[in-house]
Figure 1: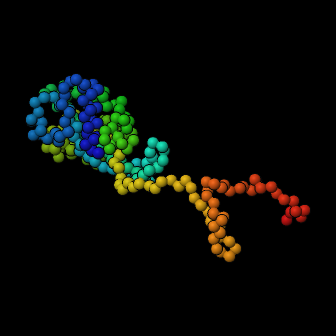
Figure 2: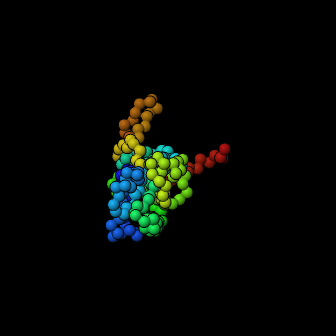
Figure 3: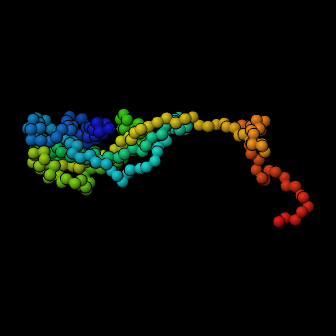
Length: 222
């Protein structure tokens, strides 16, 4: 699933305000060595944190229906994970980097919810919309300064981009066909089965009390 989220982000970041610019979209760790090898403008989206969004966890089972709206499979609800990306711009001039970050904001701010039709592969097959936030409140346990220190690089302007993606939970299993017909057997007073009274549910419906006319016995009601 993570590689499918990368695919979505690459398409979004390379489009919008950056469409036709030729800016490279990278997902590598922005270390000193990586930065030294850069010879063209780039936008880097480095995945630095993965953790479950426990507030979205669900219990029970989810029914999967076919085109006739018949339940054909059951599975556990998906688990949702927050994928946090550190988005940075890399050029020779700080002003150009700021322009690239502005273009990223312009592109990503309107995309608060990604529809299933925009998602590839198994991610789109789940039929669930995926939330996306950019430049929101940093809520992860590690600060951005700590992240840059771990990367061995110098702190520079960045955007925190978070995609909350569903991951399918296993197992998934098939269900039997729906019951459309059955039979009822009635035992006699001696406890033996009376085969003559066997009736199909489809052939005979129970008679309600309102359908049976009352008989006047002439006795007062108790």
